[in-house]
Length: 219
Image 1 (cartoon, rainbow, N blue to C red):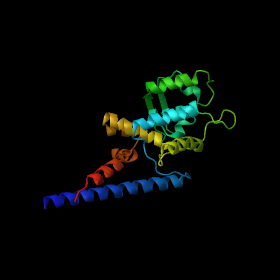
Image 2: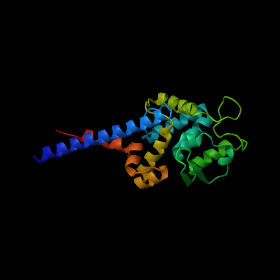
Image 3: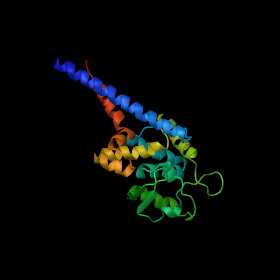
Image 4: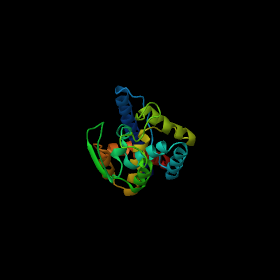
């Protein structure tokens, strides 16, 4: 009887977690549609080797594309806060101070050493007024959200990742920061989320919990 009780509780837990996940994602997609954005649910890149493979693949195509990816996974900023950066915003900087375009909240953080080396090399021969991630269409214009999406989608297609987009970089940042620190409240603070529960959902921990619970279920 005790075994049956535990199995029922496990099943109920899976059902509840799955319903919560679906509800949150439904709300998120509704919000995106209201803003006129066409955006599917995306995942973080959980496999570190896959991150390295994508970075190398993008570097083979374009230094700009590779740096865009590194910038995203090492800062956790949204593409709206990345694409408008100019060279003067990063040249010689050890810290970044950013007012998030979406929330109006401030983020102030040190630049990761790996990212700083890549930035220093990339901006060496560039003018301060140039956009860091310049479009190839027009003169000194930033890449569009769609261009950034296309860059990541191409890499996703190359490596068989279906749920990939610009938010993948931010989610990858949060996921691996949590995995390395174990501090969900820290990740919540950095991402400027309202609750740790939402942060877990956002970076894919809720889905991981659901998957683990289902895989461990026995009858």
